[in-house]
Length: 430
Image 1 (cartoon, rainbow, N blue to C red):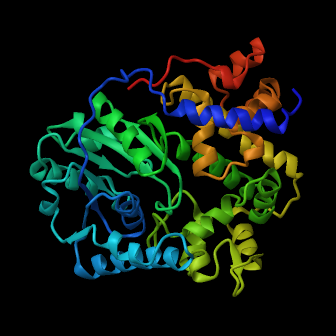
Image 2 (image 1 turned 120 degrees about the vertical axis):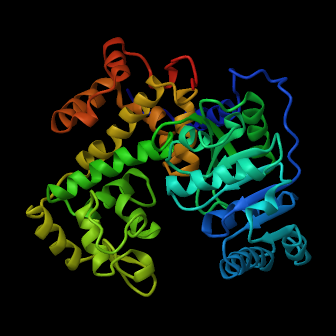
Image 3 (image 1 turned 90 degrees about the vertical axis):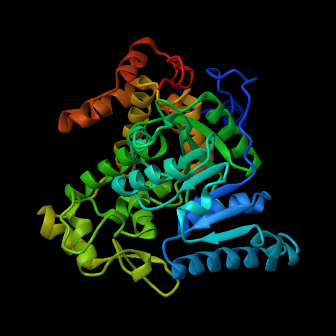
């Protein structure tokens, strides 16, 4: 198939954005829950950023931390963010105090008892989240919406520790949460229809682009990202250098490739000293304090301007761990190996009814992960490539690793000549 013209791609993106707001499974007349006050658990990077969305929109916000120092630090960052915006002329100077005046800081979860919505934004630890939700179940008023900002964990399991699983929902914000437009709204098995409808309306109020998804590891966005990352890591084990993988994806249109993104986020996320994870290269880099941009070294070396420079240290670590000599691979092949598995994973998500429609996948990736707009999203792009070519690549990758076996939908599209963007699996099912 030939590449669509610029206008056709732009029209598709606009229509996809409109469609994402539509939830056919829920009656549009469903009464909403009143949300006038919001509570946030955690004043770190995510919690602070999430709180700003609500304070900016005029909501009173109660923000809870375990220690005064963490609370003061988090609110200090929020104030600085607002001040920076005022200094750039984005709103009047007196608006900084108006927004900060909407905050009520607290050190006890009990302070959230009267909030209409509470969002938990602590780090990704199932035990900790279940402990918090058990406490929320005890202290929150009846009818309050209990939300988790988890990016990958099982929300059904989190909800199971409460006596009100119908009130539990996922609100997955993207970092920095006060800037990024995407909000994955995750409907769990027992989430009530009015909770979903209320969450969709709230997304509009805080100026987000909402996409309703179901519970599965990583939901829609991160599940597809994990597939790309696994293939990028496999390439490194074959001797392709991280900067060559990133350069190919930069050429495709991503501002950051997998390893550039890892360095920006911090290689030590989910890692602790002495840990042996499924990524020994990352472990080795962290052990010598190469933890990404924040330490001026990760997969790359960084100069004073934070420009990434291919690293001889990293290249040696890769050789020592993998035993592979550096090899050169054509950018087009790297792109196929990294991008086609994303498309395949999206099809598996649709097969499992964890997304409402193919275009919702594209809305997620366009607004949360920097997918290049000229390529319309993974599903739109897949139609420009065609199912037979993607199937051939996935069959080869599936022979190497059964986790990448072609999706049933991919085989069907290749046989029928159908379009990725026209797949209809019946919508989201929980």
